[in-house]
Image 1 (cartoon, one colour):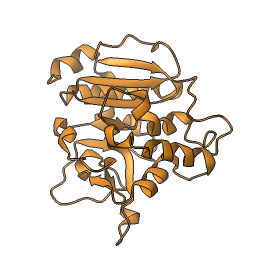
Image 2 (cartoon, rainbow, N blue to C red):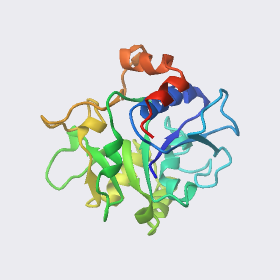
Image 3 (spheres, helix red, strand yellow):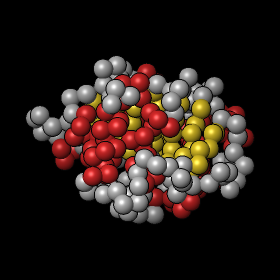
Image 4 (spheres, rainbow, N blue to C red):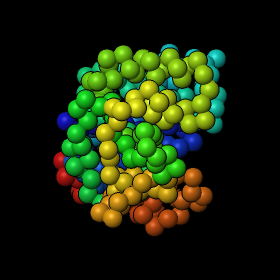
Length: 233
């Protein structure tokens, strides 16, 4: 089964829905999980979407080092995925400012055996001995993260402040156990691209007014029925 996950506070529910519609329309994903602040989403969603209210989560207490950074506890919750989805061994996690523009079902086929996750390397950290990746689009090996690594990531996040919280800690603690993800699945200015990479998932990281981009508007205005008609499930 192919699982995907999004995390967000109420302020990004609209972006989350737009991104998820693009994923459903361009893949054969089986289950899409919305980790949100409410028991129910404010709009009707199709059965392929499952909402989880994590507003009363106990993984990241308010006095934790990164709880009140610009990246809310919802972002930190990626570190708890193996506990939030105890019966799932692999999940694709996406930022809410991502839009799928091409067929991307084969992203779940990336080999993460022996690795904690797959992601695309950051340009600014491209140097020998450093494997620093952008986690805006990540394929997590939840089965392996249950070996204690996820708990270690959460413990560090609660103890010490980081600029890019869960991204920094996942990279530092999982170095050497990160599988390569082609930049076509995380097409943004910050990642290392090869000539063979063609955008399938665009990540509008740090881009102002990204909602006005044509690919974003296409899926924002698309109905769920239209997205499901294109779905290869």
